[in-house]
Image 1 (cartoon, rainbow, N blue to C red):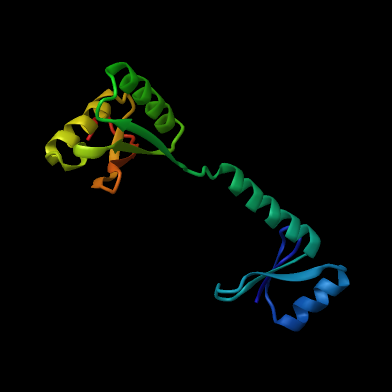
Image 2 (image 1 turned 45 degrees about the horizontal axis):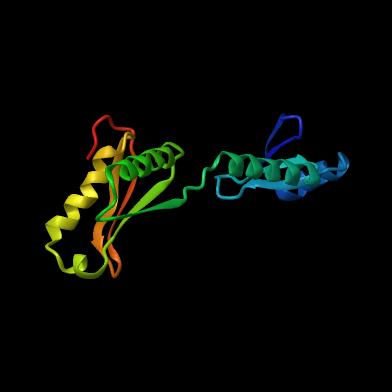
Length: 160
């Protein structure tokens, strides 16, 4: 196995018994860093310090990872233009924050059985008002309460 010291000096390729002897002399641990490498790589260092560094790396990675939520906006077929503008503004804000947005067009009573194009036109009204660049991730799908579409932010210039 290839052995490296805690200060970074390379001992070269030595057998396991020799590596353990060197680690014991320095009162440190022999830690296998890369078992799949040819030959495997081991490092002579304090195991507690190694664990601390690994935990620190995972904490940093968690901080940088951004969880995306699916936010929900509901509209009806009779929603006024002003209310649509407010909901589109809220949707744009959600997209800017990096969230996905589910826009649900709630259909009640007879509206559920009207031609599909009518409901699609109503859904399209709010999609035209959204200022952020987006793409349709899922939908439009017909459900028991109406039609829904899921959108997410894109880096492209043009809307889809």
